[in-house]
Length: 131
Image (tube, rainbow, N blue to C red; front, side, top):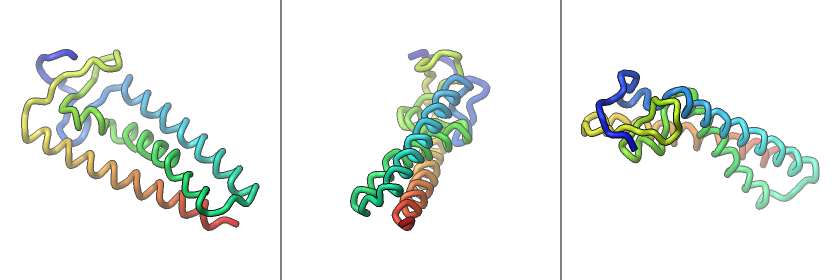
């Protein structure tokens, strides 16, 4: 972990990751989306019952969380850890020591989690509704 002055790109509650971290979240989100669509197709084609179809929520949540974080340029895990990363190296973080900034970051975390839950629930509902 790198400790020093905050990156000029860091904006509390708005942007806490650079391009390397954003690219990772995009890849995770796309992988989750491909997995979700693949599993949903199998569940629907083979008319699998609703209890098993509920499992689609997990990859849907991964997809939504990854893509939303990438879009917002904001990482939930880094914010919860009180750090940010704008370097070209994954895991090379800087501390966010300002309490007000940390509070703004946590508010953004709550928003991302809520949006991800909504997306995953909608996708799960669609998979459950299709016969």
